[in-house]
Length: 187
Image (cartoon, rainbow, N blue to C red; front, side, top):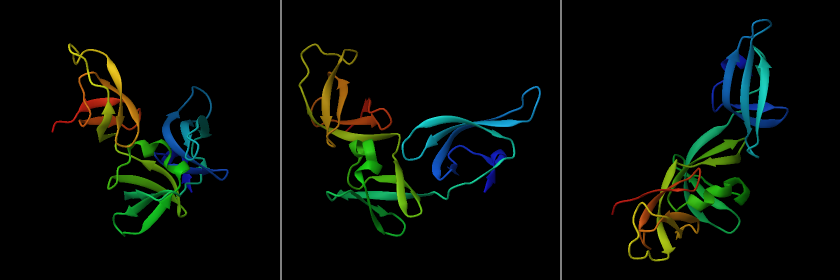
């Protein structure tokens, strides 16, 4: 149990049996009336974002969400197997929970897994990952770095747009939030 005055970004609230993460909050004192706390809450499982206003000093239930660094080991057909880097315990996480993060996961990569009551809720990846281009059409003579883009497939199977000068076998940095090419990684 916590007060709305104690809210922080990233805090997870249990509202009517559903888990909501605080994305943004602001204390607001109108000219007349009581102080309120305006919030943007993101549903932990569905990702839906809603605006909710609380009276100041209202009691809200907080959820105990454990964030652990876990190393991705392999995909076993039923889910993604991760190992806790501190206890070496292994956990299989369902495809639905991993979601689009699978496009950026490589064996041995470390991700943060949020767990509530023994159930994995979601994965947090680093802002960018380095992936090798497994296939792309060759660029044409005269292609320049300021030119257009072309499709390329990276080692996880994700298809991204890259500059024309890149070739198969090169390593690139990809934004895990948008799936966009960021830069070439030097050899």
